[in-house]
Length: 445
Image (tube, rainbow, N blue to C red; front, side, top):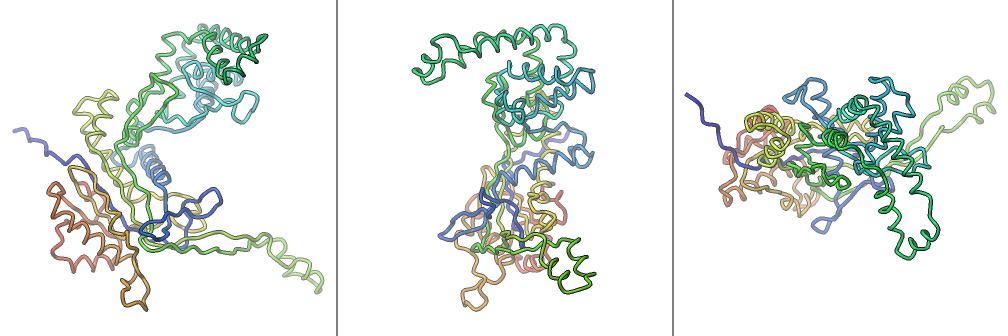
């Protein structure tokens, strides 16, 4: 007898509380902690961009290492260096000379539609102007095609570069006409004069750049406006900025770095003058550090994930199998991954959440409103709620219970905690309609 697959709600909502002490996961352009004003009070913030990259890299590294449900699956790489990566593959795998490999790879990608940096500046000349999120083997595929069609593409490259050089020379009166028209005429005229990339090669490069079966592109999506015929992907993951559930407080920490050689001379000094000359630190400065309990939220759109996987060429059955594995890995990354800024000096990546709440629903549910009024931790205030960690757990679960009674589509709520105080608190909430689990895998089983 064939089992009927269980129909699951289209959205998986994740909510997490974690307490961090003396860390600096993200900074603004002035090296200060990022903040937002919410509920009339300033809060510390960890941006969704920092969170998403940490989660994506966590899942990718595990897959590449053969660990977890996505072990061995294709993942993506987001970089401006596809020309250099393709050239490196041409050198190492196909025996091309370095300069020719770079020149050819750049010309091929430029002819497809990608724009590159100023050729007169070595640092950016061979970098695309935008980050391109593509499967990790894209450079190898492009290199293999170039090597296979080397004779044809070498002729095309020489014609392309010659036409490019000719078009770059300003014609008599062209500069004045360009200035009068706003300066946009030159680039359009130049691109029209360049020989197009052979159709077979263009198709091969577009296939290499396409999302294909890269799981993290199916999860997080991509937008590549420069190449109109390279498919974009609507992400299946929605991520919110994390913020502290209590008012923000920043500590400007003064630090002094010792100079080992100076201290050794001071220790072994034979007279007062030697010791005085070598007194003092080798370097001093300030760094901002933050502490607090953060609320984090993310949503997985299960239907969009399956749509993306099937658009990449998977059958419905294959997409279903991969989607289940991708969901498990996404939840693992959401719980375990953390931005790595200052990780060595603050040990921030070792934090564990005090509570993870996961549930399914017919639409996404964001519980940020539960913390519009910040937690009052003041022990001398009669209205104080105590430490933000346990107080935030109670407020989040009260909010969820209240919403759940009014939204019948919310089902299968699950709770995971790594905090014994929170575990004891949950024991005192017998009316809570949620299953308590002991592993990350239990959040989606």
